[in-house]
View 1 (cartoon, rainbow, N blue to C red):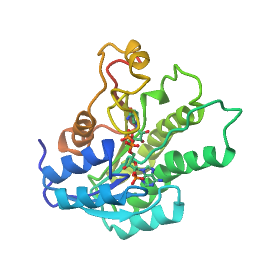
View 2: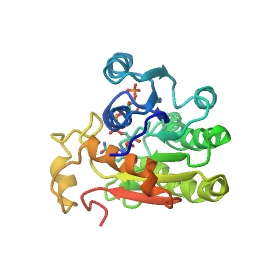
View 3: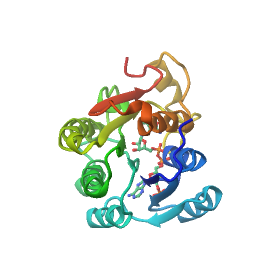
View 4: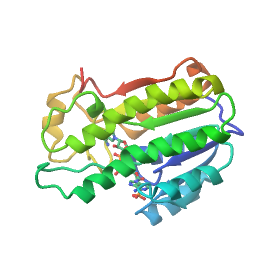
Length: 237
Ligand code: NDP
């Protein structure tokens, strides 16, 4: 485990699931952690009390609110952009406003948060965005907007790695496969279909994703940037 004592960490979308596991991991490793949430104030309150972290209600669909939250967080050592949503169903039937909201949360927020964080981030700073193996492989219909958004993060990391490298800041994407959260419960109706694509016939645990994030934020990953890091039980292999 890396010691993150005196490190300032902000997790966008930290109240539940993978984000909450990331908050817990950095808090356990000694960091000063803040996180945002939108629709789950009670989960956020409980997590903040449990971990000694600070919760802020900030909708990732609101670009200016995201930028202000990052700016007001001061000089971050680590920014993790985890907030993300999925839309399911026939692309021809989907509400275009809902699709655009997904793009605001899944693509625009990661971009603007990363750029804003880099303004104050010291050399050695780390930006980690939670993408998805669906950025590489989308074996099911009805999730094109989600797949598009997660593929877009690959370009974000490749491009911003070039911009931020001279400042000593790295940016990477973590690409989970099926992970047991409210959004994708291990006992959900898609379980057997998803496991059929995988070498490891189980959902991953949020803590396993948090471990990869912690490694990317730590000193051993100083030469890793502009890269995608897949943790998916070979869903995409
Ligand atoms: P959950 O739905 O379980 O949790 C999502 C988290 O993001 C919550 O803390 C939620 O907070 C926050 N969030 C969602 N929308 C917003 C918003 N508009 N503003 C601020 N916070 C928001 O999802 P997961 O933990 O499963 O997923 C986390 C990330 O991992 C996402 O980016 C997802 O795409 C990605 N991922 C997940 C996989 C899985 O199988 N679980 C697989 C691959 C990628 P609140 O409830 O307070 O709004």
